[in-house]
Image (spheres, rainbow, N blue to C red):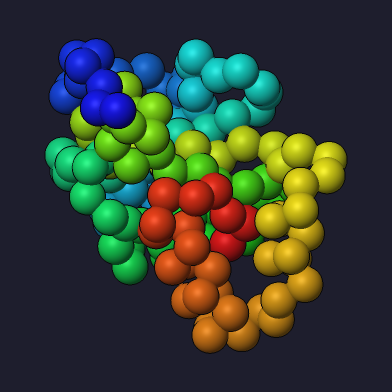
Length: 134
């Protein structure tokens, strides 16, 4: 079923320093999520306007990995790819939030190795619109 909800394009123009945590590389910015369900929750968005409907790219995955490495094991990343997946903002962004206590998929991913091949496989799952602990 296709969503008919309007999509906001200019969502991340707020420059309030109380919510901005800084740039992640040259292409992403990490901010606190003002409208979160659980706290703390972060939004990792592209600096340039890129569509939320497109698949994640290598830069997105590297930025997510950098954030998770800094935050530690207690966090995960989700990506709502388009309105059918629940996205309400058409500016590419990922959400970083605390992991639930017991989720089977996350437990399976935690058993993988830390090598680049494992990260690439996990990023493929991540890019498909599923949430993943990359």
